[in-house]
Length: 213
Image (cartoon, rainbow, N blue to C red):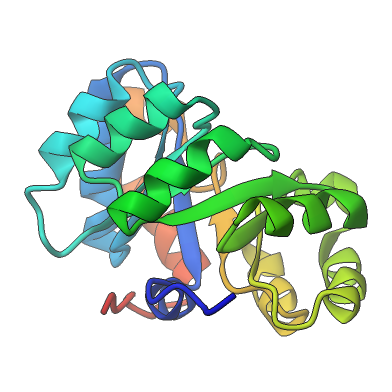
Protein backbone atom coordinates (compact mmCIF):
# COMPACT_ATOMS: atom_id res chain seq x y z
CA UNK A 1 0.00 0.00 0.00
CA UNK A 2 1.48 3.34 -1.03
CA UNK A 3 1.64 6.11 1.56
CA UNK A 4 -1.16 8.66 1.50
CA UNK A 5 0.18 12.08 0.39
CA UNK A 6 -1.19 13.73 3.54
CA UNK A 7 1.23 11.79 5.74
CA UNK A 8 4.05 14.21 5.00
CA UNK A 9 1.99 17.11 6.34
CA UNK A 10 1.03 15.15 9.45
CA UNK A 11 4.67 14.26 10.07
CA UNK A 12 5.58 17.94 9.73
CA UNK A 13 2.80 18.92 12.13
CA UNK A 14 4.14 16.50 14.79
CA UNK A 15 1.18 17.20 17.11
CA UNK A 16 -2.53 17.07 16.32
CA UNK A 17 -4.72 18.79 18.93
CA UNK A 18 -7.81 16.65 19.55
CA UNK A 19 -10.63 19.14 20.05
CA UNK A 20 -13.34 17.63 22.25
CA UNK A 21 -15.64 20.10 24.02
CA UNK A 22 -19.26 20.16 25.18
CA UNK A 23 -20.30 22.87 22.73
CA UNK A 24 -19.23 24.03 19.30
CA UNK A 25 -18.47 27.59 20.36
CA UNK A 26 -15.80 26.41 22.78
CA UNK A 27 -14.32 24.14 20.12
CA UNK A 28 -14.13 27.06 17.69
CA UNK A 29 -12.46 29.18 20.35
CA UNK A 30 -9.96 26.40 21.04
CA UNK A 31 -8.97 26.27 17.38
CA UNK A 32 -8.60 30.05 17.19
CA UNK A 33 -6.46 30.27 20.31
CA UNK A 34 -4.32 27.26 19.43
CA UNK A 35 -3.79 28.67 15.95
CA UNK A 36 -2.58 31.84 17.62
CA UNK A 37 0.00 29.75 19.46
CA UNK A 38 1.24 28.14 16.27
CA UNK A 39 -0.95 25.11 15.55
CA UNK A 40 -2.33 24.52 12.07
CA UNK A 41 -3.56 20.91 12.25
CA UNK A 42 -6.67 19.92 14.23
CA UNK A 43 -8.92 16.92 14.84
CA UNK A 44 -12.52 17.89 15.64
CA UNK A 45 -14.30 14.99 17.29
CA UNK A 46 -17.85 13.97 16.50
CA UNK A 47 -18.65 14.32 20.20
CA UNK A 48 -18.65 18.11 19.69
CA UNK A 49 -22.28 19.09 19.04
CA UNK A 50 -22.72 20.04 15.39
CA UNK A 51 -19.20 18.87 14.49
CA UNK A 52 -19.79 18.70 10.70
CA UNK A 53 -21.12 22.27 10.63
CA UNK A 54 -18.14 23.45 12.68
CA UNK A 55 -15.75 21.67 10.32
CA UNK A 56 -17.38 23.36 7.34
CA UNK A 57 -17.00 26.75 9.01
CA UNK A 58 -13.36 26.14 9.95
CA UNK A 59 -12.55 24.84 6.47
CA UNK A 60 -12.87 28.38 5.14
CA UNK A 61 -9.44 28.98 6.69
CA UNK A 62 -7.10 27.46 4.11
CA UNK A 63 -4.17 27.59 6.52
CA UNK A 64 -5.72 24.76 8.53
CA UNK A 65 -5.40 21.02 8.04
CA UNK A 66 -8.64 19.65 9.49
CA UNK A 67 -9.71 16.16 10.41
CA UNK A 68 -12.66 14.57 12.13
CA UNK A 69 -12.37 12.19 15.07
CA UNK A 70 -14.55 9.59 16.78
CA UNK A 71 -16.06 8.71 13.40
CA UNK A 72 -17.52 5.20 13.45
CA UNK A 73 -20.25 5.04 10.78
CA UNK A 74 -20.39 5.60 7.05
CA UNK A 75 -23.06 8.28 7.55
CA UNK A 76 -20.78 10.24 9.87
CA UNK A 77 -17.85 9.79 7.47
CA UNK A 78 -19.94 11.12 4.60
CA UNK A 79 -20.98 14.13 6.69
CA UNK A 80 -17.48 15.15 7.78
CA UNK A 81 -15.99 14.57 4.35
CA UNK A 82 -18.64 16.79 2.81
CA UNK A 83 -17.76 19.41 5.44
CA UNK A 84 -14.10 19.43 4.40
CA UNK A 85 -12.32 16.90 6.64
CA UNK A 86 -9.03 15.84 5.05
CA UNK A 87 -8.43 13.00 7.48
CA UNK A 88 -10.94 10.86 9.36
CA UNK A 89 -10.19 9.08 12.63
CA UNK A 90 -11.99 6.15 14.26
CA UNK A 91 -11.33 5.00 17.86
CA UNK A 92 -11.25 1.36 16.72
CA UNK A 93 -11.25 -0.68 13.53
CA UNK A 94 -14.34 0.65 11.74
CA UNK A 95 -14.22 -0.73 8.16
CA UNK A 96 -17.38 1.12 7.05
CA UNK A 97 -15.60 4.49 7.04
CA UNK A 98 -12.75 3.40 4.76
CA UNK A 99 -14.47 3.41 1.35
CA UNK A 100 -15.92 6.95 1.53
CA UNK A 101 -12.53 8.28 2.66
CA UNK A 102 -10.78 6.61 -0.26
CA UNK A 103 -13.31 8.05 -2.72
CA UNK A 104 -12.87 11.54 -1.23
CA UNK A 105 -9.07 11.29 -1.17
CA UNK A 106 -8.97 11.74 2.61
CA UNK A 107 -6.58 9.87 4.87
CA UNK A 108 -8.26 7.28 7.07
CA UNK A 109 -7.01 6.45 10.57
CA UNK A 110 -8.34 3.41 12.39
CA UNK A 111 -7.80 2.84 16.10
CA UNK A 112 -5.97 -0.14 17.56
CA UNK A 113 -4.31 -1.19 20.80
CA UNK A 114 -2.85 -4.64 20.15
CA UNK A 115 -0.74 -6.13 17.34
CA UNK A 116 -3.79 -8.10 16.17
CA UNK A 117 -5.83 -4.90 15.95
CA UNK A 118 -3.04 -3.06 14.15
CA UNK A 119 -2.95 -5.84 11.56
CA UNK A 120 -6.75 -5.67 11.24
CA UNK A 121 -6.64 -1.90 10.77
CA UNK A 122 -4.10 -2.20 8.00
CA UNK A 123 -6.06 -5.00 6.35
CA UNK A 124 -9.16 -2.78 6.43
CA UNK A 125 -7.31 -0.06 4.52
CA UNK A 126 -6.04 2.33 7.20
CA UNK A 127 -3.48 4.88 6.01
CA UNK A 128 -2.54 5.52 9.65
CA UNK A 129 -3.13 3.35 12.70
CA UNK A 130 -4.14 5.32 15.77
CA UNK A 131 -2.64 3.67 18.86
CA UNK A 132 -5.30 4.28 21.48
CA UNK A 133 -5.22 4.69 24.39
CA UNK A 134 -1.47 5.15 24.06
CA UNK A 135 -0.62 5.57 27.73
CA UNK A 136 -2.54 2.49 28.80
CA UNK A 137 -1.04 0.51 25.91
CA UNK A 138 2.44 1.13 27.29
CA UNK A 139 3.59 4.52 26.03
CA UNK A 140 6.64 5.10 23.83
CA UNK A 141 8.16 1.71 24.72
CA UNK A 142 5.06 -0.07 23.40
CA UNK A 143 5.06 2.01 20.24
CA UNK A 144 8.69 1.16 19.58
CA UNK A 145 8.01 -2.55 20.14
CA UNK A 146 5.05 -2.76 17.76
CA UNK A 147 6.93 -0.65 15.23
CA UNK A 148 9.40 -3.52 14.91
CA UNK A 149 6.51 -5.82 14.02
CA UNK A 150 5.01 -3.37 11.52
CA UNK A 151 7.88 -1.57 9.75
CA UNK A 152 6.68 1.21 7.53
CA UNK A 153 3.23 1.42 9.13
CA UNK A 154 2.31 4.99 10.14
CA UNK A 155 1.35 5.09 13.82
CA UNK A 156 -0.30 7.97 15.68
CA UNK A 157 -0.39 7.57 19.49
CA UNK A 158 -3.35 9.27 21.13
CA UNK A 159 -4.76 9.13 24.64
CA UNK A 160 -2.87 10.36 27.69
CA UNK A 161 0.04 11.78 25.67
CA UNK A 162 1.77 14.42 27.82
CA UNK A 163 3.69 17.36 26.42
CA UNK A 164 7.00 16.03 27.75
CA UNK A 165 6.40 12.65 26.08
CA UNK A 166 5.92 13.89 22.52
CA UNK A 167 9.60 13.70 21.62
CA UNK A 168 9.82 10.20 23.12
CA UNK A 169 6.87 9.03 21.00
CA UNK A 170 8.32 10.60 17.88
CA UNK A 171 11.68 9.04 18.66
CA UNK A 172 9.92 5.67 19.03
CA UNK A 173 8.63 5.98 15.48
CA UNK A 174 5.33 7.89 15.72
CA UNK A 175 4.18 9.72 12.62
CA UNK A 176 2.63 12.36 14.88
CA UNK A 177 0.88 12.51 18.26
CA UNK A 178 -2.73 13.28 19.10
CA UNK A 179 -2.97 15.45 22.22
CA UNK A 180 -6.33 16.28 23.76
CA UNK A 181 -7.00 17.46 27.29
CA UNK A 182 -3.50 18.83 27.79
CA UNK A 183 -4.15 21.36 25.03
CA UNK A 184 -7.93 21.73 24.87
CA UNK A 185 -8.57 22.76 28.48
CA UNK A 186 -12.31 23.30 28.63
CA UNK A 187 -12.18 25.00 32.01
CA UNK A 188 -9.71 27.57 30.68
CA UNK A 189 -11.80 28.05 27.55
CA UNK A 190 -14.94 28.69 29.58
CA UNK A 191 -13.07 31.13 31.82
CA UNK A 192 -11.79 33.04 28.79
CA UNK A 193 -8.21 32.38 29.89
CA UNK A 194 -6.51 32.62 26.52
CA UNK A 195 -3.06 33.12 28.03
CA UNK A 196 -3.30 29.79 29.88
CA UNK A 197 -4.31 27.92 26.72
CA UNK A 198 -1.64 29.55 24.57
CA UNK A 199 1.08 29.04 27.17
CA UNK A 200 0.26 25.33 27.34
CA UNK A 201 0.22 25.15 23.56
CA UNK A 202 3.62 26.78 23.21
CA UNK A 203 5.09 24.40 25.77
CA UNK A 204 3.79 21.45 23.78
CA UNK A 205 5.04 22.87 20.49
CA UNK A 206 8.39 23.75 21.98
CA UNK A 207 8.34 27.10 20.25
CA UNK A 208 8.07 25.60 16.78
CA UNK A 209 5.32 26.75 14.44
CA UNK A 210 3.61 23.98 12.47
CA UNK A 211 4.06 24.16 8.73
CA UNK A 212 1.36 22.36 6.78
CA UNK A 213 2.02 21.48 3.17
